[in-house]
Length: 239
Image (cartoon, rainbow, N blue to C red; front, side, top):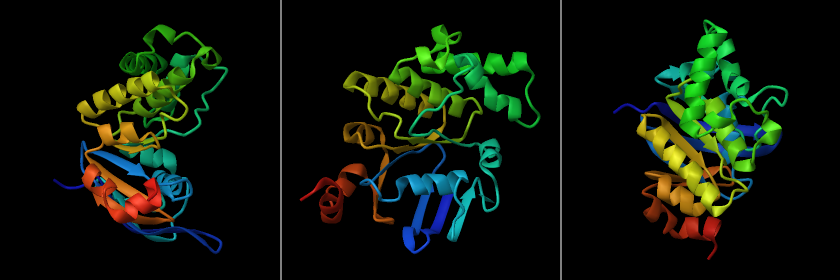
């Protein structure tokens, strides 16, 4: 099956600092890929390059066979490439329902308000926030803010979701809630790249695991086999 995302020899520099060096990675339709690495390894830079927030200095990125060079983040989102952010920043003056509906007002063509709210309600049902649609974000718990962030990313019905540390700061039971949700989303056909430091969640979720260290990919394959390699143990888990 053809890959939905293809990354070849991706490079990104900031002045004289190389953040990404020769990254090659692919994601199949419906695949669950885990991406791990220590802080500063290039994971967030990689996400920002794929999503269009950063311009790349080398390599190629294709989504559904289409080159992404030159496309803005919202144009990539319209193709079906969506991402969450590590720090949820909802619109505080809008209700939970209105927050989820916002992306649909900027679709092509924009959805009428009634239709946008209907689809937003479906997403809130999916993430378990249907009873909090009328609330404002300041009333939500930390785990509910994460669910709202996921709902905003999913309302456009993406083919690929990049979940960037959606479990950070959550309790054990809250991590399980998000993990269950991501499995459900994947069961509906959405490919997911999970970027996470909660190792038990990554290993439980991922069909395949990639490891970044200092801007390079040092592992890619079966999660247990990748974690057992000496280079990954030394660089990420310690010796």
